[in-house]
Image (tube, rainbow, N blue to C red; front, side, top):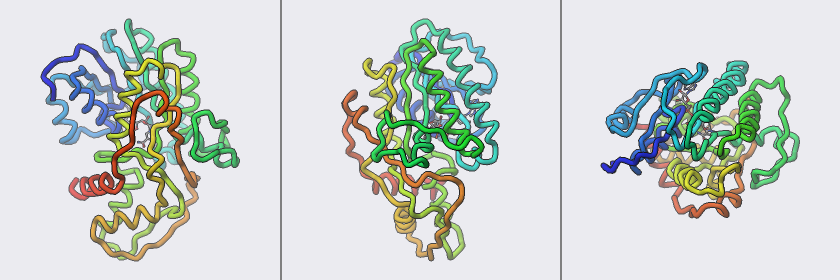
Length: 322
Ligand SMILES: NC(=O)c1ccc[n+]([C@@H]2O[C@H](COP(=O)([O-])OP(=O)(O)OC[C@H]3O[C@@H](n4cnc5c(N)ncnc54)[C@H](O)[C@@H]3O)[C@@H](O)[C@H]2O)c1
């Protein structure tokens, strides 16, 4: 890591989680002073995070963001709000908690951000799921641009609580009177992403002793974006003035793939031969997600040149070891 200390102070909520951790790692490498807030409800203090915390530039505050933030630092230039309750199972089992907590977390962090004296940017992590209602109503275009009409899902569908909390959150940012940018990540993947995502779940199933490999919603399509590419885009957004007040998809439309094909690739990486069993799940999972990246690529200089197969291989092997 760079020895030169960058005085620029950054706060990442949900910093022990997947995206927050990778973001912190990159910012520390660039010399920023990075504070993380996490209650470790989903993020874990594993070896990767312990190693990162050895750097003098990184500090972890174990705090619950449902309560007001009492850290007396008012010199953050950038605040990344990654903390949220997510994960399909979590959302379906705890819909009230999801909608209630996600809104109060953001409300507390926005209130804290408003107290910062020289805040340059507040980056809110929304989600591609905000397009879910439009997809159901047949009003989603592919690839999907940020200005696609947003429709609400049925309000009594537990899964809708996650996207509702993010849509509400986006609106809160618009009226927060601080310089903000809204990010809508689309299927970001990579090492240390937790277990409740499709790639680690398939890897776990591919590795177990069962002869049959059950694949849920094999015909659904997803466009996967490697974490390093997502972080590169986010860092460019953070440092580009014209991205203030705007909303951007974060994703990689080059790698759209059917889940069944992804499952087969994972079996191949792990050198396993199993009979595949399809299961159509009734968990309201969207049939397809595909971001249009034109708006972002117009505003920042970024080129996609990573390889999906290479990064999938790396990720699956990381999960095999960890
Ligand atoms: N990973 C993706 O592909 C993806 C896709 C769409 C949107 N997002 C959004 O991006 C953000 C980051 O996603 P991620 O994959 O890193 O999630 P993650 O679950 O790995 O990280 C979220 C972190 O927030 C923390 N947290 C939750 N409640 C908290 C509380 N009350 N107080 C303090 N900390 C709390 C968790 O412990 C966790 O470490 C989330 O807001 C998510 O909704 C991610």
